Image (cartoon, rainbow, N blue to C red):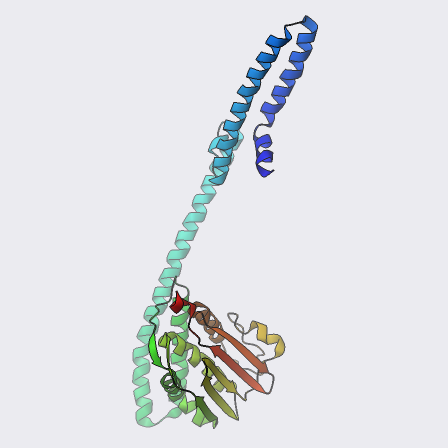
Length: 314
């Protein structure tokens, strides 16, 4: 039906001309008593000529429309003008797209260089804090290091693919290494840590999975002022549970959106809203399912299913 409409719209003038000629010829033949058989042959030949021209125009127009080209309509001065405008705007859009991409690449390169360079003075400050046993500085350095890691991860997520490196490793060792990194926060806030891990070797990317667990664990620490944080692993299900302030029911559907930080009166005023966004994007690319259950003032449970990833299977 769509093709018929296109055919009639392209050849409307030809079809009307043919019918006008047909009616005029019939009137002329009746008025002058022409041989009907000869007249019919002439009309049939004209019909096929019109049909051939119409079909040719239809397929040429269809091909041009599929290519977004105006070449078929160049004979008309107005349509030629429209074609020039169309091509000019296409070039402008393409130039803007290229310049935008180059600008984005420059910005990503600048941020990557900056984040790597800033790590050198931060390492020096970290050594000084160790020597002086200044745990306040050490805690803030860990925060800064996490923010830098978030920036780098965000840049890499915008690229076509992650730099995957799947291998077999101990899930217990990965969790304990992450907990060790944040032990100073547990001590500072006097939080109880509960580990219930059924150790086994799993096949995954330890760097990206570790980043996910760091983001979730640090969120739990940040929003838990008293009580406990429990990390468990059984039958491929890894859970991080806390007794913190929880998340409002209406906020749960938005927590993995970029920049969303929830109720600013109760949550960290300096929250960037990027942590759970990164968690969601990384797990989506790794092919793992997860869910977050939470009740306000009661705590939050993050559950991650670490069964074989779709990426590994493929």
